[in-house]
Image (cartoon, rainbow, N blue to C red; front, side, top):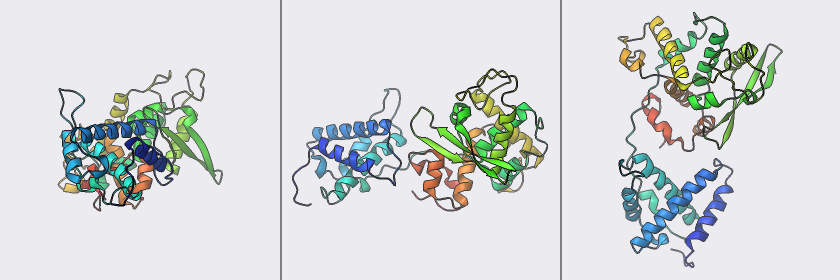
Length: 333
């Protein structure tokens, strides 16, 4: 190790924070992320003190022991692999800064990665099923072009082509949708500002022409029979009197569309493995299935991982590892 004076842990954390904020290539860290990093660092320093260990002399075995010793928040639960990896990632980033600063010679966290999370693979649809769902948005779509049909079509497209979550859809307001281009006077393109559920980072999504047309069509009927509108009014409503749509309402829209399209396309229990879905599995499919498939399709089409992370608002793109069974190339862990 370089001959340097030992750095106070608080001073070191402050220098890491400053360096982290100065990195334009990384997603900005909000107050919640900084609070969590500080909590992990304090927790780790307490562990070092209890074991007579200097933080800048830690070895991989020490960090592995620490990750294994992380206790659950409740005595009725056990510590999940997700939590262990979250703590480990914070330490890995902190020690990476120590390495770059010449305070250590090896990042001890690199050799102490906790086991892969025990995650159930996420549900996603095959290409034939996905094609059937897109075709069904316009061919024999229930309700044709009435109020609910236009609402439902927009909701489905925002899940299938913008990968929005249920909470993000419910949180959209009228001022989130902004026209951004005019295609030769024939159609408008829209940008959608999506606020992360629970506050924090906001991202802007450029909607494709198909989704933009659906949004424009919905905005034309959205005010019918509703109270006086203002920019903060909900974009997606549950009925003509403007009540907020409930999560189960969005789930029911997905279920109805899945059943309608997959039955019509004869892909339920099809003899072709990659084009079939068991009827029992269908009951577990909903908004997340459409979002997952959209993300997998982006990845398979060559959209850069960082761009997918931006579009989805992921703090860590590793959440996509659940989709590995649906990706044409291994996910870069």
